Length: 88
Image (tube, rainbow, N blue to C red):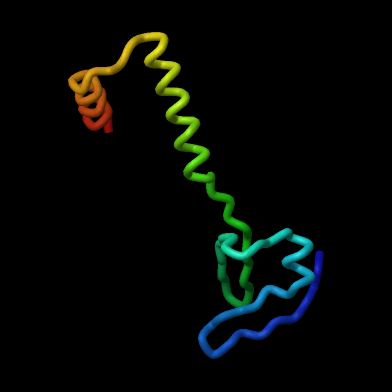
């Protein structure tokens, strides 16, 4: 574990020390989730799926489904949506 000291600004901003950023391979725009309890604060990297990558996977699954079974009609989609809504 890397122990380093940082200071909170008047605006509540905290700089993550360079050694910690390097060790954790943190980059600008990385998201962190912050937990606080009594006198302890924990920051953890938040790994969200890359939306573009996820969308491409979904498109590929849909294309494969269409290839095997033909395209879904709007009526069939609406029927499935209603079935899911009523099941909850």
